[in-house]
Length: 253
Image: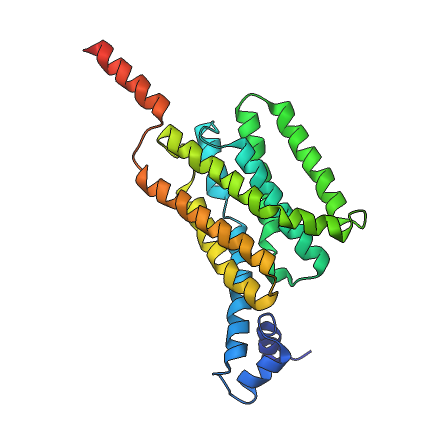
């Protein structure tokens, strides 16, 4: 079969363009069609968010593994974050929304489970870590199956906002009390902030689902506060370690 560059180009473009918008751009050369520009930007950002999500929490996982500690990481906060991610994914999947509007939740869920398991494992509870992963897997299978009524998924999605608020606020409060961000990764926090801001735009364009958009507005706000704490506490030692260091200094003197 002969290589057809035009066909390959069209196929690639249709990943982010509708057939109608492809014609507008490359048949009629109407490159300033605003609805098509917005749709293309939204789709491109959506896939960009998904691509970025593959690695977004990896710096956090590596930082914990290298330190051999989950210090400063709130397990309850991580679990609430995982609950919100899972509810978002199940809700959007069952409603048939485009993968580009929710796909990052799949990768974020895997990485968030890894963080929770590490907190437990590094805290000396390996059995609890295995149980955590197993229970989550069973619950996810039920949510994505026909066993779960749509009304339940809608209810769970409505609970995402309070879950996000409580989960991220617990981390923010923990940082404040410790006078440090502990093992929080700056790269992860900043990527989460950027992703939540971009997702607000893509959801408005691709789904128009006000509930989903509100979730990401709340998440972006709280991610922004956490990012501000990272900057403020950048060179600060945890309160406990600072007190220990101070005591040692007094003893030496």
